[in-house]
Image (tube, rainbow, N blue to C red; front, side, top):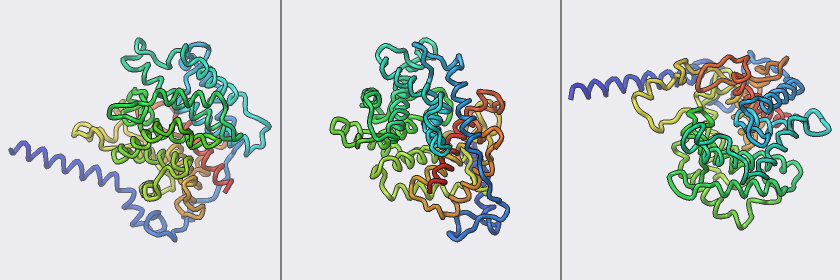
Length: 405
């Protein structure tokens, strides 16, 4: 009994210390005049936050160079002279680069854009004969199935996003959607989602990542032109997807909820107004003192919680502490999604997020910095730039959307 009592006391102490640490920024804002971003709707940005511009052309050059490198990297190579479509580099690039093309008045897609789209179309055309991104033999049990589910969603999202620019659903995109629905799970705890790559790599290839994948599938449907979401043959699939996203919502991290908010912005009527407002409120409450957001503060959940896992909550798998400062990926993704979701351009917290992005671009090289949730990486290395690739893409989306408004 005494031993159990001591364990309970220790657990309470640890929880108290953890919550005190997690809440310290909020408490600091509340006690510091001019910095509390949640208490007053009339809050004005700090005088210490000078307005700055950002370098669109440098951002485009960075994204193009990184996508070209990824497509030529031997480890990304797959059969039939194709390459793996990555969540960190290729997908964000596909979503963001067309926005810069418009902003820079470029005549057409960049070379890297054309290669990426052709690669995705080729893998869709050869779906029944081409190998998965990862095989069971080379990477472990279920990896082929997980690869197929993941790729099916990413292919549909990329092609649907490109079709949304010209208002016509292409035959290749329709085929990609057919493949995606064929991969959708029809039973089990993840019914309605897709088999998803599990490499214990947060936030895109971990236990909670099937929800991430399902939000991308919903976004792909919402982006598809010619009212594809009304097609009679997919209504059962859509209902199963909606049920999954609703059923699993309470267990999700804030960053997954942000992605649900993104999907709702792309798919009108998909997200109930009450849920939209709840996510917006949750996200705004996690803004940091400097106006940005930090990915670790958005990525945690209580799923599978234990005392042992709690003790390593603020450490990465290599034992190094998480980077807790504001970062480009979290700030770009959150700010962009808030813009799409109807938050007023006059909202002070939104303005401060955009100001953070303007101030924190590396204007010479064009990128915004992101940090791995999994291990400390050399930031100037190619692999070490993966999170910065995603950060740059979402920062670009947020800032170009702001310019449009």
